[in-house]
Image 1 (cartoon, rainbow, N blue to C red):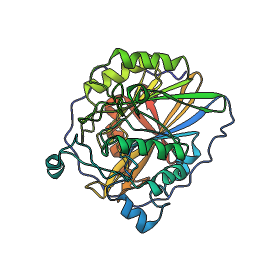
Image 2 (tube, rainbow, N blue to C red; image 1 turned 90 degrees about the vertical axis):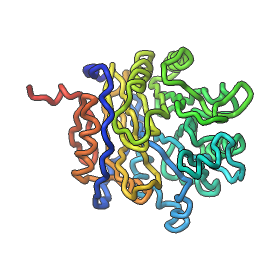
Image 3 (cartoon, rainbow, N blue to C red; image 1 turned 180 degrees about the vertical axis):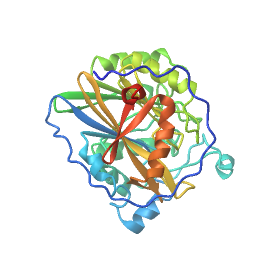
Image 4 (cartoon, rainbow, N blue to C red; image 1 turned 135 degrees about the vertical axis):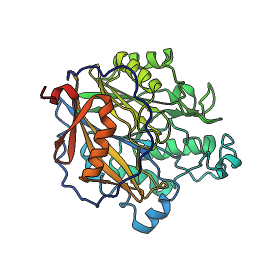
Amino acid sequence: MLLWPIAPAGAPAEPAAAPLLDAPQVEPSLAEPLDATRLDEITLVFTGDNLLGARMPRLIEQHGEKWPYGAVAGVLSGADIAFGNLECPITDHPTRTPGKSWESIQEGRNFIFKAPPAVSGPILSAAGFDVVSLANNHAMDYCATGLTDTLAALDDQGISCVGGGADEQAAWQASILRRGGLSVGFIGCSMIVPAAARAGDDSPGIAAHGKSYDDRLSAAIRALDTQADIVVVTFHWGYEGHRRHSAYQQQIARAAIDDGADLIIGHHPHCLQGVELYNGGVIAYSLGNFLFTGKSALIESAILEITASRDGVREVRLMPVWVRGGKPEPSDDPKLIERIREICAPCGVELVEDGWWYEVTAESETDPS
């Protein structure tokens, strides 16, 4: 198992938001994927929020179905397993959730999204996604029918999902994917839970979790650790626009790793937060937006790549990405790379250049003193 020092206790203070920086479009030469039949290790790649709703359907109609992930499909499909947070239901259902009032939507305090079923599932599949999380504050934007349609659309494309289901038990159900001789288990839950979104004993919805680590999550991780070689827990959490993680995120993430999780993958803040190496595990507090049409035409992002074996994590790498006009594009822009270094530095790690990738190492490993 890869060993590294435990990061200092206590989360850093929240910083002021910084303006985004411009960058040229770059088309990388991607490395050949690892052979999935190798029994000793696999590669996993993780992305943040994927929004196929909002303005994305019009862009797809204009540019074609290969346009959204055209610059990153090689990275996603080249990994043994690719993950993303699906930030909208895939449905044509017309009825919006009663959990978000029309007044709050008009005032910009809430948003309602949905993606067209005819193209959304196939686009995700063609891009290379193997598993997505539905545990977020938009999965129930179009009520139970919208969630049911989403589950069907993903199943039709052979894409696994976690964090949402027909009832609470289903929403908390782990998904185990097998590649070669290794198994990877996923659990998803959300700490951002609109009214009417929480799954119940007999009602559909998302797996909801509070801001303190609880016995249910602990038991789920411990159980999954006996069934899978690698355990991934994905959280929808944190505060929008904050590039520093909060104390409660760190407390929950570290407790999950202590209970047997290997990887903690966060999303929701709509910006990058740091990557921490803790007790043999990896915590990506937020991978930000990935496929996303927001207020800005240029958004900083990254792809996280993990090489792991039955013994644990072997290598951690980041690929810098600009989300340009909604579309993720790998970039070697020095300004973007420096921004990601600054975001990760408070977590006690450094980034070491490795072609288009940057290896994430414990600070002491590269400190000449």
